[in-house]
Image (cartoon, rainbow, N blue to C red; front, top):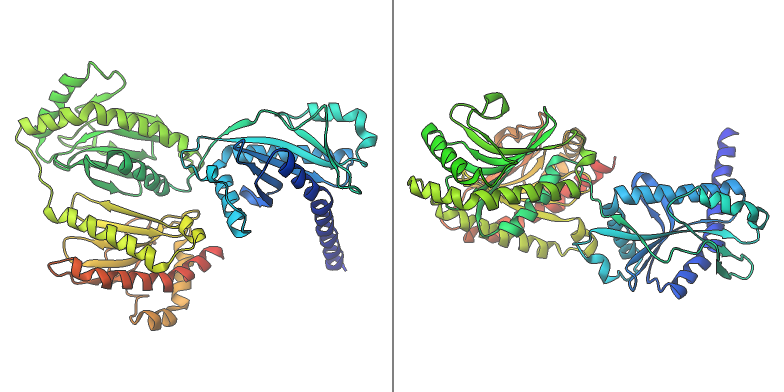
Length: 507
């Protein structure tokens, strides 16, 4: 009996929402289309935490989002609830602007709605929005004397649309119109992990410094930038110091020859210290802080509370600005000093060949999988190189959950590895258990037993339960000869293993 009542209540709610959609929402949408020239609409757009917005409309001419909540029953408490919901949506968009924008674009794609071109601008810094509520005109008349007091309780300004349910006519309240000027909400993108944060930042650095950096070394806690003509133990580094809740940015001098570190440090200190008052020069770098005998650093700290919630695009911009200052200040003096000391560095000739090879592989995989626009938006591929001459292509299809789960083509000194990497603290066991359940089916499709053979692969050190699933192939003199084979094999891995991974992540 309790269950039946619950079902009846659920049905009543659903019918009420459907009525609100047709009786209030549909006329409001048509009003926005005609008066404000809105050309993109999504009904019931899901925001962070499962909250749904009744109306999200976009005007290409204004480049503004219209965010609206509809209520058919115009009781005073219901109207207050609608205003509170709008303020809640405003706060969510303020904190998860990137997810809101991406969700709107994806919703347009799913419903076959043409996506306004101005929404595809990746340089977007703010999200201009206008807020409104739409109520049943007839039902709200008895509270007309209280409306001023009710609306005054809420900020920012919220417009009011009055809908005549019988005639479908919509009028804009003269005292409370939709705001004429939009409220710019900062475009905030939040990252789920330090690794995801690093990858995005690495892409920015590649675009900006492609010509001067030979290596970009990425680790779950740090990344290092290596100048093409400077030995790799002299490098720029960004490091999350979780124990002190700080992010360190700086230039590290880590040569095994202590005299080299000292000579370069003293030279740089002499030439640049008068120009940079906010940099710290440390000639006695303690081992417990990542240093040790003979190592030196020039560095700065940015405060971070250790919570991934605060890994945002704003923090990234701040870090990039500081890192850029280090690069501009020390790049040429470092090169000059290294040259004067006779420490010039020439990278291995095959490093460039490996990078070019993986660029071709990446492009061919994209073509081979024939991505839909929806899948392509979720796809990311990075190529990173390391000072030990290992070059890696990482392919991720589920970046909204975890970039620590990815496919990988790894070219070390010998051979080529094709892998699925499981490096997520919270998802590894779940995914690996699903792979084990389907191991026979996977073996049949890929023609080789992979699950349970992880000991034959290079180990993943963090987190402890990380695993790699894949195989190693011999490499001849020319990488070009292996191009077709590696593309075909990686596409097979993706087609067979990716659906299992995605299903496991949904559980």
